[in-house]
Amino acid sequence: MNIHLNYRPSSGIFYLFFIVLSLVIFVPSARAEFGTITISGWTCTAENLADYYRWASGGGGSNTTTFRCTSGSNWMRVEADRTAPNAPARILESSSSGSANPPATPPPSSPPPAPTGLTASCSSSGVVSIAWNAASGADKYHLYLDYAGDGAYPTSYDASVFPIYGTSFTGSAGPGTPYNWAIVYSYNNVSGYSSTYAQSAPFTCPVPNAAPTIDNVTISSSPVYPNGGNPSKYNISVTASDANGGANIRAADGIVNYQGVNAGQHRGYFSWFDPSRGLPSWGNTDYKPGSHMDCTGGGQGVIYGGGFGPEYINLHSCSASVSGNTLTATFNVSFNPNFASPTTNNTLSGYAVDNAGAISGWQPRGT
Image 1 (cartoon, rainbow, N blue to C red):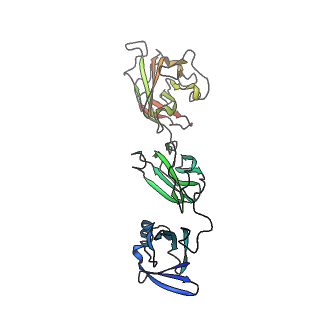
Image 2 (image 1 turned 60 degrees about the vertical axis):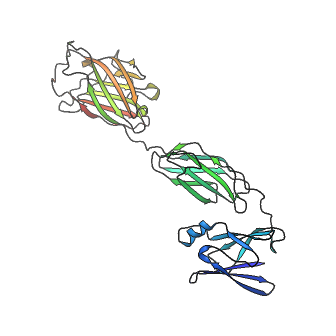
């Protein structure tokens, strides 16, 4: 038995033809917009009616409609191509006595297993890459994604991609997008979905590396008494921010009079750095004698021994702390008596370096 399906857009009618020997039997169908066909002696129900509606309204969907038909104890499933009028419909499967044209290969008796080896990741450029191993008997796959982290599958998901005919998917997302999971089902055209699914671990699209910034550089009190007056020690704090977190900053520096109205009259260059991630910002070991020390909270502090006024400043202790996207390095210092001038507008500038080597550059933040 061959089944022909004809679609006439002007009348919205499907026509079904049966060709048995040389006799053509003309059987009009029900209205096409309902996605139904009529076969004498058979009761047929569309299996993918929602997909048909999407296709009929121009909203996508596949080109075929499948129907499950029964006649007493006999049954068959047929597939009709909506884009090819008068083309024979294909019998997908049937009971042994329900069709004159049974499939050459028996259909699967059960759905395919879930895929294995699912991996999911996102690059710094926002490319989402998902891959899995093929499942035996699967014709295609169905992917679900949750990027809002607002619930567990199946009560919540944010994207559905079907059908996928290969074993990978590539998409795009914005920087910093957190994915709660990716889930993939196997699907067989006859036996349907796998009963279980593969699920990935959470993953996040990284934020492209941006240079840290200097929020502020402050001194605990002003004016400064360089001759051992009261107070004789001062805390200078450099606070820097990084989009990838304060812990991503590996060095934070301060300097007096590198910038501002007294630029060039340097009165000290001091640095906090994490030695496990690199040397101080100047990249060598030119330390002022006796200035190199461990800091409370981790890292080390040092005064640069080159030509930026080490003779004017002493380092007594240091500390570092991280809070969210910021790191604050604090230097407890005193100034020597030869720091007699300039007496006003001595500018404090800050500088920071992150783990990738991106730098803030010197930024004046206080006096």
